[in-house]
Length: 453
Ligand SMILES: NC(=O)c1ccc[n+]([C@@H]2O[C@H](COP(=O)([O-])OP(=O)(O)OC[C@H]3O[C@@H](n4cnc5c(N)ncnc54)[C@H](O)[C@@H]3O)[C@@H](O)[C@H]2O)c1
Ligand SMILES: O=c1ccn([C@@H]2O[C@H](COP(=O)(O)OP(=O)(O)O[C@H]3O[C@H](CO)[C@@H](O)[C@H](O)[C@H]3O)[C@@H](O)[C@H]2O)c(=O)[nH]1
Image 1 (cartoon, protein in one colour):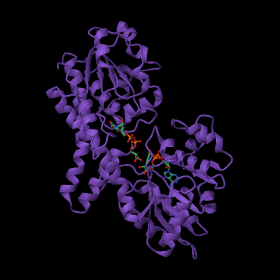
Image 2 (cartoon, protein in one colour):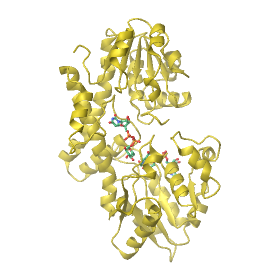
Image 3 (cartoon, protein in one colour):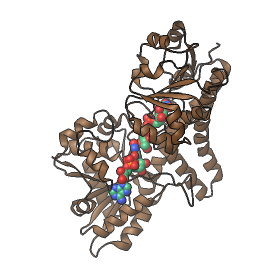
Image 4 (cartoon, protein in one colour):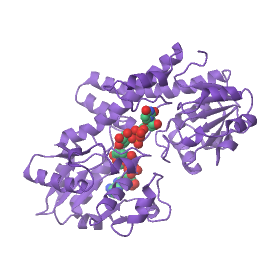
């Protein structure tokens, strides 16, 4: 997902540099070479179409690309381990190791290897050991850490104008030279003061720390949203007023049904595992609480929906608006929608889903593989719709899970007319106007706002 935008931006900013994205997944490469690129990301398609075949190439010939490259980004997946030591917490580094071994085996000239994947602190050391033990005579490798900070949905904007580019390197003469080579690529469009260089281990840890700090803010405001609902305070007002303090700042304080995405949970669990491995149990518990609070928020919202629908949703129709983990992406990894829909299916509700970007096949895959839903339950209880209006027809409730702009401007009067009564709306993203909806006749429940005050 992330290497496409990064490489497209490098290719567009550096027309004299040949950029080749290689992947062992042939279907993915075919999609990158087709008219429909495999990910939805605003601005990406235009960039790819402008550079593809000029200085941007997509190939499954990994060895050929290794042979001809001077700088190699390792940007493979590092998912949470599903079994063995560290199961459920540690990062699975099998793909990083396999890619590193391949480079060592194939390279016939010296290279700079850039760790782009998000990895535990000191992974570069393991990569170095693998390279040192396997390289051909006369071939040397320098390793840099250059974490990726783009957010999906704004990836191109983030890459064109990054808050910072971080390059971690060894203090050796060749380490500094390697850092300068990579730095000179970014310097084509990133101001020098935003290119930050650190030691390798600091760079690796900064990536985990950044995501942990960002997710921590969301869990903090979500924890406060529960207090708001119980007291009559309004979480948007609390967030706004807190954010005006320049020491706190306004960003990443939007309460929600819970954060999703492929990074936050995985990277925090990675940090938790690292802390436990370093015999720092208090530190591990502290960061784990960010994920525990996120799970609580998803569960809490689901339970609130059942409560408001007279304590039973069996046989009721629930319309879910949004399946992606955030707006402006088709990515569904760790989306709060998956956990919520699983909870609805456990109660035998009928679920009508609409998302403007996520394909029905992806929704089917996620619900039958990432959630505890059987194919038979899926067939019986779940329908995916192509528009927001049919999804809401004859439903008892609408649940807003993703903050797509489209959901703000729907004709809710028309929707109300097609729903069962009382018609309920649950806003898990705080994007709707509750007063206007109540005027139409809806029963509105918003995270972080008590309906009765
Ligand atoms: N998705 C993001 O927005 C984002 C942002 C910042 C950092 N990251 C990090 O970047 C890394 C990649 O994330 P992603 O979302 O792009 O993952 P992804 O699963 O979408 O893509 C990884 C790709 O690597 C390929 N691959 C695996 N082993 C390979 C090998 N040996 N040789 C060639 N290709 C191989 C896979 O086939 C897959 O297509 C992760 O460590 C992630 O934490 C991702
Ligand atoms: O105030 C907020 C901000 C975000 N979210 C949710 O948090 C999740 C993550 O959002 P975001 O961080 O914008 O997207 P990601 O693509 O997951 O990006 C994060 O993860 C990437 C992968 O490591 C990093 O590179 C980025 O810097 C980091 O922001 C999504 O579900 C959002 O809806 C909230 O609920 N409230």
